[in-house]
Image (cartoon, rainbow, N blue to C red):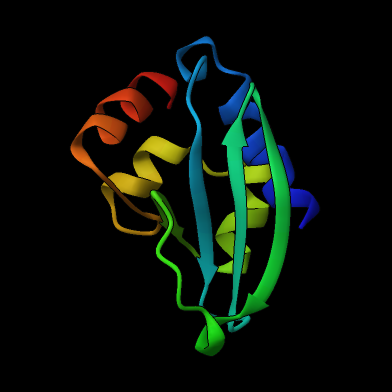
Length: 105
C-alpha cells in the first residue's frame, strides 16, 4: 500500500493532473488484490484493498502489475514508460484520460 501511495501520489502531484477527478484501481494479480482509490485535488484519497474476486466496480483509470513491479517502480529500478511499452504494466482508461496520463508519465 505504501509503494502504491508513493507512485500514485507522484502522479497526482503532476501539474498535468490539475483538475483531474477520477476513480482508479491497481490490480495486483500475484496477491489476488485490487487497490482502489480516487485521484482528486492533487492527491490520492480513500485507498483501500479488496480481494480481486469480490471487486465489481470498474474504475476510470485501471492499472495492472505484479507486486514485484510495483516495488521496482517505487525503488526507481523500473521506469513506467518502458514497463508499460513491454506489457509489464497494463494501463486502461478512456481516450481523454489516456491522453492526459501520457503527459504525466
